[in-house]
Length: 281
Image 1 (cartoon, helix red, strand yellow):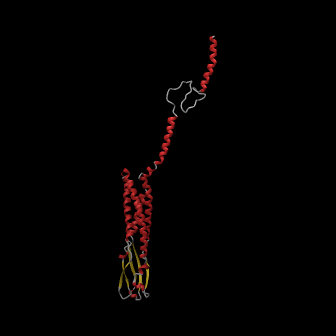
Image 2 (cartoon, one colour; image 1 turned 180 degrees about the vertical axis):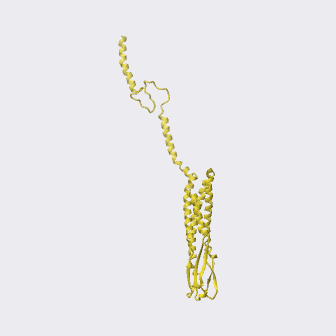
Image 3 (cartoon, rainbow, N blue to C red; image 1 turned 30 degrees about the vertical axis):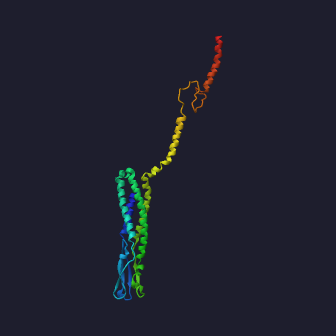
């Protein structure tokens, strides 16, 4: 349930905070001749951060001539890779949510649905880790390349001691920092979901069946001992006054058919035998 709710939401935050970024920085150049100064040099920084395509004009403090400059660096590969993974993860999360809710029987048929879901979850977990790490490094490089102090080094007028150059403000990159955080949160979410998807495949249940075999064998042997060797022997029942000689049984004392009954009959014979013989004489 957590995967269904948070995966699309985290993916939206990840690609929206990165793919929709637009920032601006400003530097100023004060020439010795005030009429040639420019204190509002604005430079736009946008996604996908191909900084070498960002151009701006700066005064040369040498007449009215201005020079056209561009930033340094291309960090589009890591940014676009991160946004692509976020978009595909969002689309797959929506599709999986629809399948979980409306096509549960189809999902569990032949165990094919859980198996595909398990493989895709593992792949997305790995891709989230790689893309987030790559974008975190790319963002660090973007911050260095768009630092106003670094841009002032590109302006030739700032290399002259008679001119004064200053950085007015840098680009606000809080949303880009948020995108990196959501990237790693998505990795944690998808990696944690691997265990739950693994249990849906049935591999976890099949692995627990093997330790039960010795218990079944032991219970079978116990039933064999109880039912085979402890049963009464087959054949006719011995007479009432004779002891039963079944296997594994002992004669019962004081009960009918036991040694007590046999001694009683013998004593009775000894008492009645001589008396009958005297009467006959």
